[in-house]
Each structure stands twice: as structure tokens, then as C-alpha cells.
Length: 309
Image 1 (cartoon, helix red, strand yellow):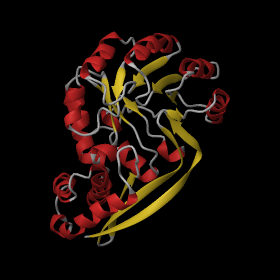
Image 2 (image 1 turned 60 degrees about the horizontal axis):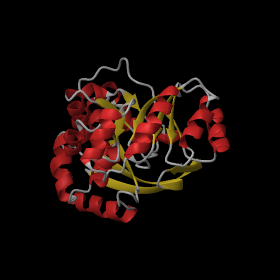
Image 3 (image 1 turned 60 degrees about the vertical axis):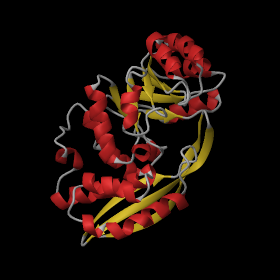
Image 4 (image 1 turned 180 degrees about the vertical axis):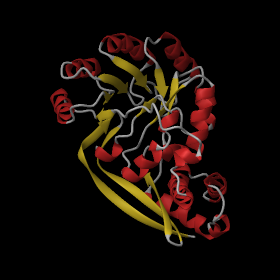
């Protein structure tokens, strides 16, 4: 079994701004696993916030090469466990390899992954479309350029957050979800939630920094009139249990958790705990988005618009 790596730099239609910074293009590492005439594709994005670069992830994947042949006939779950070990716990690099292994696995057996997992492709949620932070006029323009979506996710974390949502509400009847990307205090969250609920917002994603104390998070969880969904606070499998009682749901992302193998386990665990489930993206291409889509039967919410941003 061979592994091939390709670095991509993909332009984004508009500068994409969240509470902690702006990107104008996305850097992705594409992984291809080849086994005879079959091949599987995976993807991971470079991410400064989590400290993963092209070079660091390439080095991790190079370390995995000598072990791949021994795992040719193993399930992706078995491959994942070994590769995470040999790649020294690099969840981002492991994610790309895991996606490729699942793609190859499905092609080998002639079935999509969701069927291999025993999931039913009915009543799946639709994705939201994300409006990045900008001037209010520019955010309205971005929304108007993408009409017809039933749900918009609005990035917040500015001094004008309520004005932004109020202005956008004048241009659509669609449902809103907001993501503060760690940009609010506990007090801001509680106050903002009241007005955001009036403006048709369904939930708030990660209002507090991931480093906030459990007591602060619990206070917000108990007092907010809107559900609170963990993102930066829920990276890998152990975080699901840690988020229980502090968040109403979790947003699982393939890059940060390590791929489809842990994502599947995390979503099932969250559901067993009575938490809402969501899968988001990190502005991947259609390779990463297509992989994440196999998890839709397990989700309450989907944010899989990365390939069209």
C-alpha cells in the first residue's frame, strides 16, 4: 500500500474572518492511499491555532509509511489506532490518513461508509452557510449573494454583534446560529442570548474561551436561554465526557479529533449522554466535506459548507 501527499493552497471567495483572525486562502494537505487499482483520499488543513503546519503533518505522515503494508487488510479503526501511535499523537495528520483509509475501505467493499457503519440515510440535517465577520454592509452582501439557505451561521465576537444579527435578520427569514469563537465573557453570553433568541437564533457556539473555568461554563450552561455548543472545548474523544453538564451539545471536527474513527465514537457517546450533536468543518475542500457527510445520520446540526466558501 502506497501513500502520496499533495499540498494545496486554495483561494477563498471572500476573506474569512472569525473572532481570532482572518484567512484569504486555505492550505490543505491531501493524502492518497493506493492499493492496486483502488485509491482513497483524505484531507487535513493547516491550522495555526492548533499548531499544525504543512511540515509538521508531512513529517508525521512520513513516519507512518513503513507501517502501512502490515495493515493493508485491517479495518480503518485498527489502522487509526496504530497510526496515531506511530505519528506521536498528531491528530491532524492522523485525520487525513483515516479519511483516506475509510475512502479506500468503502471502495474495496463497494459501499459508502455510512452503510458500512449501519446508518440510515433518512431525515438527515441540512448544512448551514457561514457568514464571516466583516462590516455590517459586507455581511449583508455576503448573505444576499447566497439566497435560499434555510440556515445561516453567523460568526461573531465583535463590539457590534447584536447589531450584526439584527441587520441580517432584516434580509432573511432563515434560521440563524451564531459562533463567537471564544470571543465573549460569561456575562456577555447570558445577556446576548436573550436578544439573540428574539432574533431567531437557534444556539450559540463556543462563546467562552476553551481555557475558561468549568464553573464559568456551568454557569452559562445553566443560565443561558439558548443552547450552548462546544467547539474549541471539544477536540478529542475524552472531551465529550468533560463537556457533559457544561454544554448542551458538541461540534466535532474531523481535523482536530483525528478523523472519522474517533468522530464516530464521539458522536455516539454524545448522543448516549443526551447531548446535541454537530459536525463542522475547517474550510476543507470537497474531499474533507464529503468524508464528514457520512456522519450526517448521527447529527442534529451540520455545518459543512467549507468547499463553497
